Length: 126
Image 1 (cartoon, rainbow, N blue to C red):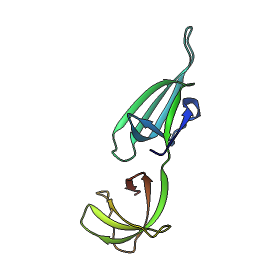
Image 2 (image 1 turned 120 degrees about the vertical axis):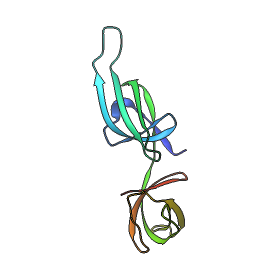
Image 3 (image 1 turned 180 degrees about the vertical axis):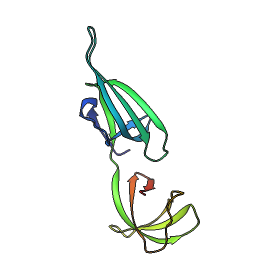
């Protein structure tokens, strides 16, 4: 899996983080001051990039955490197979791939799109 390790204190809202082995985008990040017997803690609220599930995490700020490497790519719609699947050609490698289309996005051939890719998972950005 394409990922790297970072300290929790280096994370910000909008960054990606692995929670429960799923890549998530951070929606909120807050820290609590260190107490009498402990270190400062960070609370992270995030949403799954590919599944949309909300997840949360509470860790000491000096703990290490995995951060996924998600690529943002450009593509062109070649054909629309059904209301939920489209054939997209990557504009960098000219590779043709099938991607699930979001319900609220109406695609037609020759549309330029932007999508996220991590390993074999892909998601079209609205």
